[in-house]
Image (cartoon, rainbow, N blue to C red; front, top):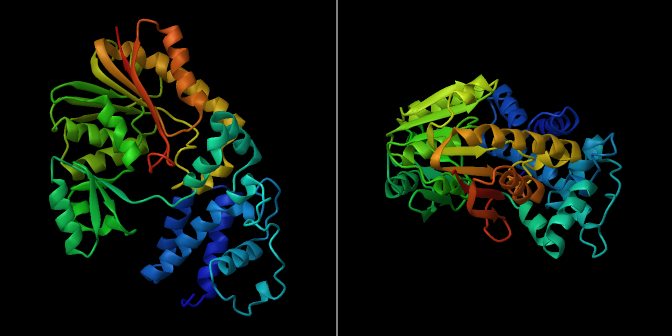
Length: 393
């Protein structure tokens, strides 16, 4: 590697990994705080810290098992940097760097080590996907593309493409409102982003609102809105007409949604905190469309959240399954007669997806399943998502 290693940047990676794995804090929040504390860093410095941190998180088990702490991070960082071509300087931490614990290129290296996941998740994946699991897992480890979702209220895909080309960014149009950058870039500083022309949203995620098929003038209830990525997409598909009621138990997420809606020029969204069943009961029989993008394990989005690998276990899965059942049962009565309800997760586990829908239809036989789809990165090329389209009686 031609780039020189600097002690302060390597120490930053060390600190980031400790905070993410040992605390644990979300990787994006840890790196954002680090960058804010170090305004003197240039783009190459920030890129080195972020990419090195994420690459180590993506393949951490090749160097150390998070299930067997403590981890000696200088060794981990040294092994990784050497594996990607850096010549390690003569620093004290690396005077006696041992060989890594595994030869991950060896044919007999266990899949869970080579692709860096827990034994529990490896077993779950094999149960769900059989012989397909190694290819799917490998795809889940590839860095995610940067995908933009065009806001049709403000711009067209062609106009966004022209704005990208002006600043030297190459891209391709995937769909009428979807664009893929051909190389990674920080698009959040672009004038087109500040003017609300687009949002960053994976192409698989964009299929959820498309499946909901919202129409201008309708009333849509988004039961798990979060910070509103799909809510904003729905508003754009409705041409900013009609009404969207976005619910979430966290006010800070709804505040972010309102800020994003303002930037996007969308004013047909009403936010509500949903901390009890009363807020949902008031909506019974009122919605033409209901979106339930439910909390899940996040097993389908490990490409962009590799730190989540070590937080996914049976306890989390069980907790998600109970919450998903509750949300489905609570929101089914919100549908008007004949309304469309979409259930979605960013999970690859059948228990959260096909099995959850089977259970719902058994308990609510008057609902019908229009279609369901499991989008997987080894085939679809983007994040792992499950989408089920249901119709109310």
